[in-house]
Image (cartoon, rainbow, N blue to C red; front, side, top):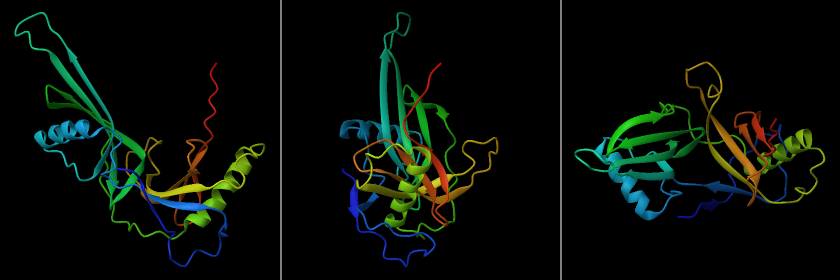
Length: 211
């Protein structure tokens, strides 16, 4: 299933952040828009059902199946499946983490990542896609001032949640309503912004330096 493009929010925008009149699309990606094949979705659903896991709040983003022959009794192959998911809360994705479920012979063996505990925060946004366009290009200008090729291009804005403690030693989950913004059709650069005030959470231009 392909992402569903919606009209920009009709809420009264926060006047403290100007609305860029350029192209901006509010993108809604339902949990059912899995990034794996239909056959893999069926296998993943069966694994989740067998192990009592809730399939209604996850979007499958990766499925790896491995079967290794054994040369000792009972000579049955060792079967493992790794299912990576994007979690959903209140119908919106949790941007800050993915969870991997590792199954051995159909039984859950290990969970990499900590599943969200959810939140009572509403999924109703304060800001709009047009305001996110303003914040995004201001951020690009700040961190990549020489990157002029992006000017005038359309941006995609996706609403979700972000755990502000995901990269800290604090294990207490702190979910806030947030936006992921990127140039349409491009993976980088992208940025996450807090919805209540447009504060930058994270920016990534895709540049990696290895020593």
